[in-house]
Length: 304
Length: 272
Image 1 (cartoon, each protein chain N blue to C red):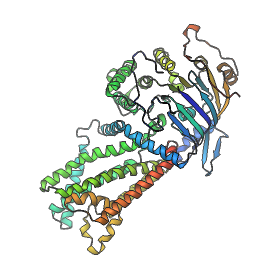
Image 2: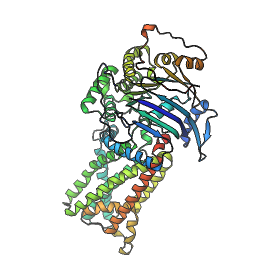
Image 3: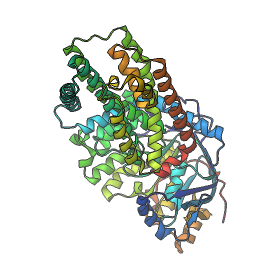
Image 4: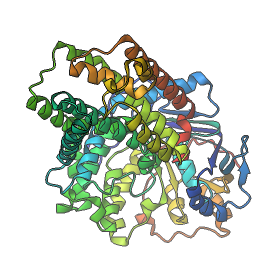
């Protein structure tokens, strides 16, 4: 039983959450920690569920971690994360005007398109790049306390959402300049953004674990991302493709995921095929990520 | 009631990466003959082999053994950081593991921010976190440094911060690595009361140390670890004598010895 210490910080842990748990110490009749080797699949599944739900209980912690990451990165800088906003803004303006000129596109059409695309791409590529380091960078924490791995996933997703929020300024400015008011169709982007959130979690847990085990993966991921950036209609409009060949676009998961957010905001609802492709790829991603995590969760501490 | 049950636990370290070489090297010297292969023919270090013991409230277990014998790995396994490849670990009771001075502190964050993170980890409210801050600040005497990155602290300040933070949370099961007892004389004089309060409050203590006298003073059970196995276990003086090859000499005066063993001894330990 805890004895009152001189300074008496009565550290009373929260009431126990159901589960196997021991993210934080807490009293209870059940063992706070039970580790059994060679678990069956169902037990591993339960551990993985515990990991996920425990991370939400610690949501304040991962939000603080994500926020402090940004604070560290921009400590001492005058503009802080707004440097990213500025660099995105300059890139949008340059590319927009240059490509508009080269491909004879109307700026009124092209600039909002490329602003939206580049901001979204920034989010995806940074999220994926960071995901590769999600666990390896948390090495000292993982080795010193038992912490749900999803805390680091939440930290990665939350940090990148903050950066995305800073970059949104670029979109708002471009839309205001061209007096574009997204209509009611823009609401269709909301479920799409929810899907992005789920996918971000899945990508981080999958790449975080995979990159911890195989140290070559981050390089492979980086080059895949670079190719995807040029192959996917991000800085070029899908309408540049002849109509006959546009059926090929939804095969690219990046295209479908972009289109379900970008389309509604620019006033066109994505087709069923695009949605089906986005949902299909997302379901596959989540399934692989979850099953993989269930399988390797206990091993990650040995890999980092 | 807190409890620790460890049954036939084995822990293997796979050696995967090129950069695992440093780990490999550090293990090699101590672990000669302990490299094996697992079922998939990967090279693994057999860090723990057939570890088996039970602890009940009142038990103070000392772990002794040379570097690389598996003491820290055992503590990490009890803390739930490493999961065993064979066997079973059950821990009942709130747990605090003091494994390294940094304890996952982030060097780029300020002292205050590190305290905040620890508080959030333990699920404290904002008010409790402020109390934690005051307590740690008073103990660590950081003053203005509280709002400066830990990176620029002197090593003494880092130790004081880590120590103050670690000892502010009082668990039922306390796992302690030896760094905790190693500090300069001034610091130890100050820290002694704080450690002893925490140890007295804990129902179970597992302490890994190279200081035989500390182990003899603090513990009622000792396990001698050798190459990842339990070489001997039992009463402190007997096991320590076996380990060091000579009787343990107590230099501390009788009245300066801490009274740390509070509950009746009910440990069940395998005897060698």
